[in-house]
Amino acid sequence: MVNQSKESKITLLGAGPGDPDLLTLKGVKALQTADVVLYDALTNEALLEHAPAEAIKVYVGKRSGEHSYPQDTINKLMIDYALNYGHVVRLKGGDPFVFGRGYEELDYAASYSIPVDVIPGISSSIGVPGLQQIPVTHRGLSESFWVITGTTTSGEVSNDIYQAAESNATVLVLMGLKKLARIVEIFKAAGRHNLPAAVVQNGSAADEKLVVGVVETIENLAKQENVKAPALLIFGEVVSLHPSFKTLVKQYASIA
Ligand code: SAH
Image (cartoon, rainbow, N blue to C red):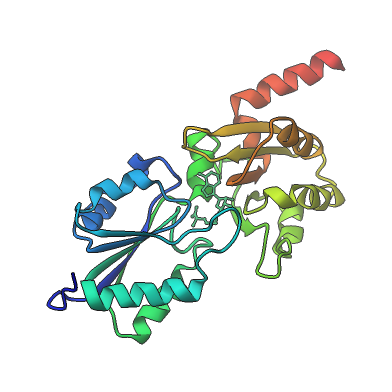
């Protein structure tokens, strides 16, 4: 049913890292007034229950690693639905502006003069370590953090990783699991063999998995535990605060 009497508007909504209870209250309210929800692969479908039963729900995520919906198609769908149905909620994993292509969508909507509201979400980059009780900063251990992509548009590891590996910052790598070997090499080249490191698979979800080690061991540990995407890589002294890191150190000490 096309309802042209409704005002067109778009809400770019961050869904948080996976657990549906990690959506903001403002996000719930936006979903309650949605006429259409366009949602990504990394958003929990349970969130759709906040939307009215009659709202149109469209999956625009990737299937088996393929971009089933090119960004261009998503942009056009979003405009088309907003013009014809009213309020489109564009539900995106984590925060819309952390490797979420949110600004491209905002820009596209602006070119049609459709108003856009942005509702931030808990980014996996900070939320996933936090849920593991790994702080991204901690007095005396880390004064800053970098959030870097492991896979740029050209398919390469971001060049920023070279500088990050030389720094004392906590380094959080998104979309980096397939590049773990390469990233580990970069840290080793910077002499950081013993830097604490962790990999978290699907943080806050039922199949969450965590491996904790150091730069030297983390790749093998992730392989042994068969860690799968989506996964966050965490490098930094703050990982040593995790309880399993202390056990690890004791094990090393008993071998040595
Ligand atoms: N906008 C999102 C990130 C999109 S890029 C955010 O702010 O979280 C997608 C990457 O994010 C994944 O490849 C993975 O590296 C990371 N990611 C997203 N959700 C995750 C989760 N629940 N656990 C671990 N990593 C996650």
